[in-house]
Image (cartoon, rainbow, N blue to C red; front, side):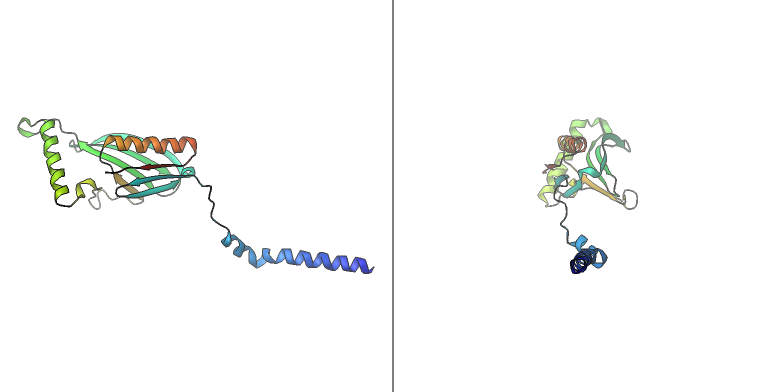
Length: 176
């Protein structure tokens, strides 16, 4: 009989100790758990900033081209996620093949090059940045990066697409 009472008391005490954290201490235990370290990340290091996302949240990677107002050709890569943020990477080039008075594309290209060179000498790189005109081109929950050439844009698309298809993290660095 004594043995039965001792076993009953021991079992009750053990149960009470195991149940105690489940009441008030469960929240405390959840907060102390470390963040998962095995999350697969896609990261793009860009001249204007860094974009990083969980590969598992990518639902689409697209590339397309369009012309704006008959003057600029935009090639764009979008990365859509199951979250609320869209990443947009784009390259802009002139869509004009000949200007007023018979100015050819080569001449227009030379003028654009001289303007870019002048901007760099003056210490401003605004011509390289994303340009928005509020409210026409302001898109909530959209992160935009402008790249200097199509090769960089193609590298971004390839990297994001590879991460999306494989489920593995990738990192790409684009410099000016």
